[in-house]
Amino acid sequence: MRNILIIGGSKGIGSAILLQQLETNRVFNISRSAPKLTHPNLTHFGLDVLKDELPDIAEVDALIYCPGSITLKPISNLSVDDFRNDFEINVIGAVKAIQKYLPVLKRGDEPSIVLFSTVAVKLGMPFHASIATAKAGVEGLTKNLGAELATVVRVNAIAPTITDTSLSASILRNDRMKENMIDRHPMKSYLKPEEVANMVDFLISEKANSISGQIFEMDYGLVTFKI
Image 1 (spheres, rainbow, N blue to C red):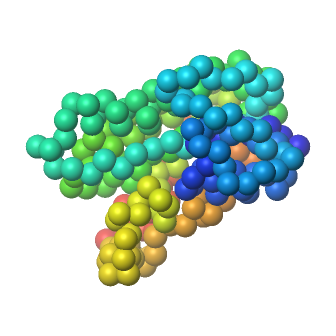
Image 2 (cartoon, rainbow, N blue to C red; image 1 turned 135 degrees about the vertical axis):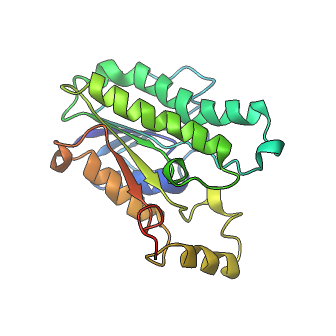
């Protein structure tokens, strides 16, 4: 049984990852709200990763940082605080967690870190300037930290297209908008949280021991294909 630390495991993609990892592993979750379940393998710490001191955890084999944001506005409507807040949530929170738990991770069983970007970094999408700028920072962190820790801890990131979670509820708020989103993707679908959880499970496993510093686009062809 391995020790999996999830930051933001109470909702959306984080919740799907937590549910999957609880099947075989010991899971520590840090989030402001508690997961909607209890389990003998689950330890929850209710706190804000940006504001509060992170708890000491004796053993960590994988760190998965899930918090994110979707700030979609024209550049003229984006404030400096919008950019700052997105950067804090997506980059600074991840850095804070990594710095806290890296000494423990280095002693872990096949240790790895998984972060989250977005397809908007590579694709270029209207109204995504703030969140794409922040997630570009995540991708830079992934590659450069992966190089720094190459012999010790693997570091990878997933860049999902829109995923059916509460964070994207306003974008998928009715059947017409869901159909439009399906039609935008060359493979005619968008992501479910469980699909992303499966990729995380692979990346933190020994099956991915040769993989570090990579950004994995889960995009149903949105970035790669033009059909």
